[in-house]
Image (cartoon, rainbow, N blue to C red):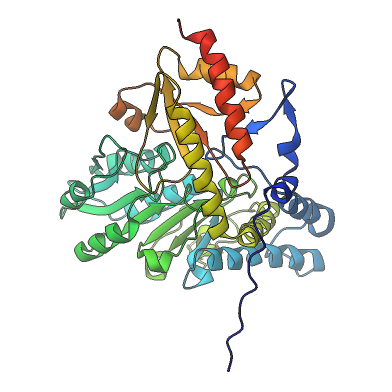
Length: 417
C-alpha cells in the first residue's frame, strides 16, 4: 500500500502573509507600523479574528451544559480546540491537555496541585536565572508555604544555561525542575531533551515553559521527554486568555483540583464531592470558548505556513537585525547563544531603554522596554532594563531597515556627541 503523501506547504509569500494580518497595515503617529513586540503578544490573522467573530455570531452558548443545538456546537468547537492542541504538541492523549488562560495559569496549576501537596521542609525546586517571573514566583509561593526553597541554575555571559551546573543542582532534595524552552529576553533555546533525560535518571519531574517556543518551532512533548509543558495562545497568533498545560496522565490522575466550581465535578454533596477525570477536573467554570475557537484557527494558520518556512524566514530576519544593530556605535547586545530564536535584547550607551522605546514609538516602531518580567536576569547582567526587538514570520527585512534607521535618528536626541 502506498503511503499518502502530505501536500507540500505553499511557497513562503511574505506579501500574501502580511495581507492576512489586518493590524500590520495601520499607521502609528503617521508612520507605517513596525511591530517588533511579538514576544509579548503576536498579531492575529484574519482567520483567527473571523473564528472568534463567527462563534459569537452563530454558535454562542456555554459548553457541556446544554443538549440544545447551540450548546452542542459550542462544546464541539471547544473540545475540537483540545484535539487540535493535542496534535500540535504531539500529546499521547487529548485527555492530557488542560485548557487554561495561558502559561501563568498552567504553571500555577502545577505549583498548587502537584508541587504543594508533595513539598515538605527542606525540599527544593530548581529553575534557572533566565526564567520569566511566571516560572519563578509560583514556586516561591508554594515553597514558602511548605518550608522548601527555590534554587536557580546559572547562565554564562552569552545567555546560555550552564547545563553542567544545572545537573549538579539536581540533588536529592529537588522535587521538581523547571526551565524555559526559549528565553523571552535572550532567545536562548535550552537543551530540553538533555535536561529531561537527566531529570528522569534522578526521578525528578520536569516542567517546561514553552510560551516562547510554540510560535517558532514544532513542539513534540513525547520527543522532549518532559513531564509538564505549558504554552500561551496569544503569543502564537491566538486570542489573549488562552493557553494549555500538557502533563503525563499518571501525574494528572494523582493531582487534586486547583479551582473548584462547575463542570469539574461528578457529583456534589454536602458530605463530600467527587471530581471529574482529567482534564475536566482542572477546568472549573465557564472557559474562553470563543478564544479557543481562535486557538484552533491559529494552529491551522501556523501549520499552513509551515514551521520549516517560519524558521528559515525568522533566521534570516534575526541575522539581518543582529548584523545591522551591531554596526551601530554604543550598542550592547544581550544573549548571543547559537541557534537562538528571533529575539534581540540590547542597550545603547548613554540612553535609557524606556526613553528610546518612547521615541521609537513616535517613529512607528513598537519594541518592548523594561525588565521583561525577568528581574533576576536583569540583575545578572547588571542593568535595570533593556530594549527588546522580537520578530515574527510576518516581519520583513524592510521593517528591520526602518527600525535601525529610526534607532539612529532617535539616538541622536538622547546620546551626547
